[in-house]
Image (cartoon, rainbow, N blue to C red; front, top):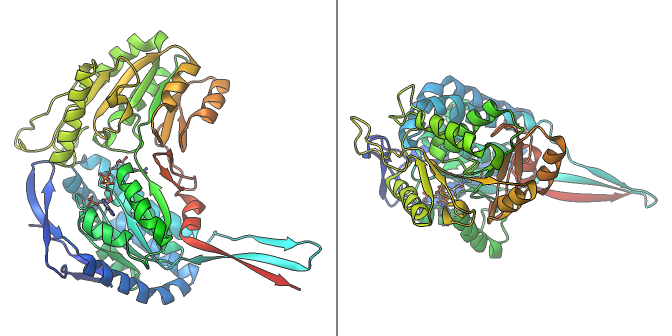
Length: 480
Ligand code: NDP
């Protein structure tokens, strides 16, 4: 059994109340470890450790903070295989994906913010004619909470922790209880890199108890959260009367809009990826595909052919394209949506069934599924499925597709495939989304603002936006 502990004040500690939660391996459905079911008291210990570490860490030079963060990045890179194997086993994602994307990106998060903090500057304003100058201090907030989901476990966990630490805060963090393993290993790396005790504390447990204790802690002054929209709304309700700073990165139901003038092969290959990477469990996946009516039948045939060729298999096999879904309950939720789509007169063009992988019969495998929908109002087109399921339907004009693209409660990302400049400019301006990709998907530059509009969230992460979130601006006005 691979049991884990909380990482508090640089030490690996048993939960105070000694409660445990089973950790499942999605590839075979077996329990392979136990994780702490941390209580309010564990969160309080983590908070005290963070609070104690704060006066020194917040005064540590930027060069030293930067050096430690970059050291963490290097150690993650040096341990790529171990981390990738762990992530794949814990989450069900193909090991090839964990090796190529998840772990390298976690390392990049630390390197990027280790460098960014040395370039982060604040403003000054001369009050002309009044003999005064104003300058802005960007001071760390104190103890902050970081809560992340299960789909890109270490990738998203570190996307919050790295800027929080770089800006001089101390952190109480909770990964998803469904995928806690790489967060646990991160504690070891932080010790090896020389991160002072208590600067980062990682508590494991359920969202509704451990997570809840973080969000309602009166002295954890800011919460950076990535997860579902309903959880985000709950956190906002809890945090508002406590006047916490909030960054909420929530769900998505992103349109992938394909015009006839696009580079067809590039579009087709990328659309397979943007539909099914990580079993479709990425908030940025283009789960609603709208295709120019003039190429609809051709696209339908070519796309379905490519999707049928994807190999569903054990995550550790090098040629697996689609691994296991993260949990039994999530698999059931995704299957329910396929039934709902059928009830709403959707046509299953391919997939739709569970897959039995030899030797791993109890794993949570599902065929990549393409559903042709009769209209854009149906539930499978409006609600976040967060699995290997996409819808397709044709459109006849720019205005029609723009209206359909925007007619959901979410607004995280959108993808456009076209070579027409005017159309690109018009639609990029009018799509309700935090990110628009044109002729590409999920190309990330860590300096850019990242986040969503509408029910996809509040605030932006990435680059200096994240450093602004994790600092308080204070204006100093000096009359001379
Ligand atoms: P959840 O909202 O269920 O959980 C996210 C995190 O919040 C987990 O660590 C969870 O703990 C914790 N949590 C749950 N309830 C509470 C609570 N009351 N107080 C504090 N913390 C709590 O999301 P999922 O893990 O299911 O992740 C999938 C969702 O995340 C999808 O909607 C997806 O779109 C979204 N997402 C958004 C991204 C973005 O950047 N906008 C990126 C990736 C995913 P536990 O798991 O232990 O219950």
